Image: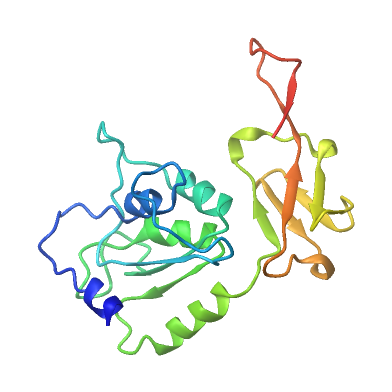
Length: 211
C-alpha cells in the first residue's frame, strides 16, 4: 500500500527530467538526502520516463553519462531504463516526447538493460529486471580517470588473493576488471581491488599512489 501511494506522483512537477541527479542524491553516502538501505541490500534503480534525462550542474551544464556510470558501478548498482528506444531524434512511441538515449547508455553501462515504454504488457521486461538484479556480474568497472597500472593489481575475494591473467583480466580500453567464470563473486561476498595509478607530472607524490 505504501509503495502504491508513493509512486502516484502525478505529472505536475518540473518539465526538466533529472532522474540521474535524484538517484545520485538518494544513493550518495555523503548526501543529506540519502535513503537508508540494508548493508547487504542489492540495489537496482529503474528509470521510467517519456523523455530523456536532463541532469545538470548548478551552473546548468549537462552532466556526462560517464559520471553516472562510474557512480552506479562503484556502488554495484544496476540501472534499467523504461523509455522510448528510438536511436534517432524522433520517438517511435506516440506517448513519448523524446527518445531516452542517456537512460539507455547508463543502463547498458551498469550491466542493466532497457525496455520500451510502448510495450502493452511489461511482464516480460519486469521479469528480466528481477532476474538480472539478483545476479552477480563478472565485470567490475573502475573509474576511468584513475589510469591504473595493470601490474600493480592486488585483488582479493573474501580475503583470498586472486591471480591476474587467470582469475581475472583487466581491459584498459573500457577500464573493466572481468572475473573468470569460475571465480565470479557470489552474492554477499567481499571483493577488494587495490592498484597503483600514474600521477600526472607536476603532481605531488612519487609518481603513483594506492587506491
